[in-house]
Length: 231
Image (cartoon, rainbow, N blue to C red):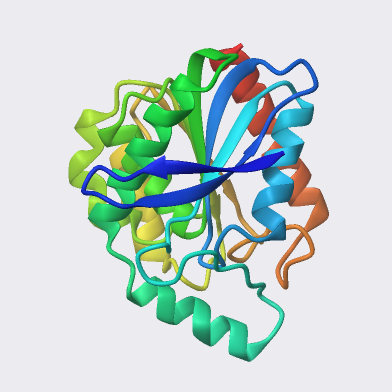
């Protein structure tokens, strides 16, 4: 497990946390951060994927504002900082950085032949955009916020997409959720699961809305999805 440096398409560079399996090789997965940076939760997700045989890479998408942010969801001060970073985040540049990360991951020795992506919260929306804008072999999105505003890109999905949606997401109103289901429900490349009683970030380990049973169900589905499409 180590930090690596990735060159941005428009100049400059940013870091990413890279976790490899014991074998040193396997399919690649870009892990897309929440609004708390590449913190212990994101690093833990990378380590978990590495233990399953994947090479996982989580890039620092807030580097243009403040490189190296690692905060939690445990205090009001951290939430305020997280929302400030979220509000200052340039989504277009963020996707460009993810595309650079995906390209970098493909060059890492031992990675391949396939590479996917997975994202949570902020990363859940970005994962949807990776499904529409990148050549990732498959993508998983957890409770993305604002996906309903990007559904015009749905026609660009050419590879499998798995979506986990919280039924009581305080950041995604019911009408937004229904819009997503109506637009994507008939797409054979998209598999959507709604967790009816769950709030946003129900799969964030030890987070304020973490639900172990729902998280396990969602993670088991993600594991099977990646095993099917990447291995």
